[in-house]
Structure formats: C-alpha cells, structure tokens
Length: 96
Image 1 (tube, rainbow, N blue to C red):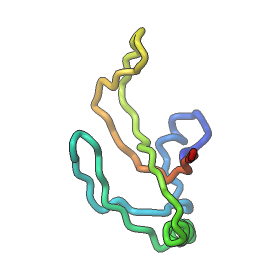
Image 2 (cartoon, helix red, strand yellow):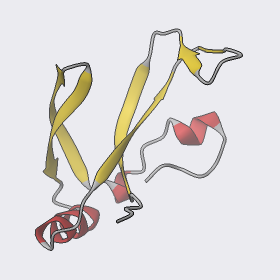
Image 3 (cartoon, rainbow, N blue to C red):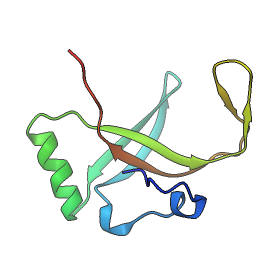
C-alpha cells in the first residue's frame, strides 16, 4: 500500500510489517514492465495469496523518486535517474 503521508522520508520508507509480495524478476515486454512476483510468507502475503486464489484481480503501483519537469501539456516528464523503491500492491476499481 502506498503511504498516505506526503513526507518524502515516509514515501521512501518500506514498512516491513506490510510486505505482501516479493518481486523476483523484472523484464521489459513491448515497452511494458513485466515482473515475476511471489507472495511473501507474512500475514499480508497470505492475505494477498488468498485473494488471488479466490479469483480477485490484483494491481501494483510503482513507488519511486526522480527529478520531474512539469510541462504545460497533459503529462509530467520524468527526467531521471529514476530510483524505484517498491511495487506496492494496490486495490483496483473494476467497472463492468
């Protein structure tokens, strides 16, 4: 889960008690980051795995820091270097 505190020190801290998964491998496929993920042997990991086994969809969000350039268009450019801290397990809202 992403930290809600806007303090950059909290954003860069990984709370060990909330680890649900471990990224074991990352590769790029058609310009999309594709990780291999295993559930962790923690309470959050067991919850994570249980939801998947029940058919729930899971989603991840990358947490990292980098210099940014705000453009007047519809995007913010990452200037790099990008330091990735984690891929957080997040809930996704599905619409039918």
